[in-house]
Length: 144
Image (tube, rainbow, N blue to C red; front, side, top):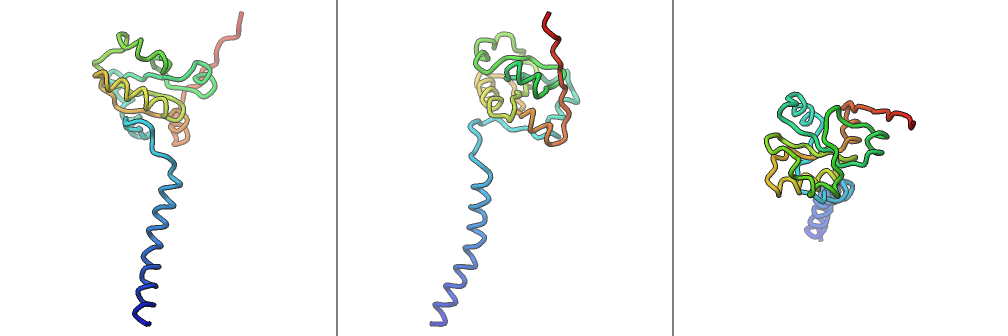
């Protein structure tokens, strides 16, 4: 009886960390639907330190850019149009794709990488700002 109790208590004690790891994994949310690297703020800041070597492609709608903010220099191509605009994208720079939380940016990065572009990764503008990064907020001119 003592041996059975000892084994039962040991199994319960060992199960605790496993259960907590499973709970942590569940809280982390689903895995991203893209293969591209999700850039952190420090990684993006390091890339932006050499602007002549990087190209930012923002795949958000124009209203998202004005409402949320973006980066000072970028190429704006919505995700649905990206494959038709590949000829206009230079292949001599590392590419960073941008969306609000990196989901669309990740898909864009995967597409570009599959077409032979040098993709550094994907970033979410809102995630970047929440991590302490600074976005440029553009006020559109009033209608005439």
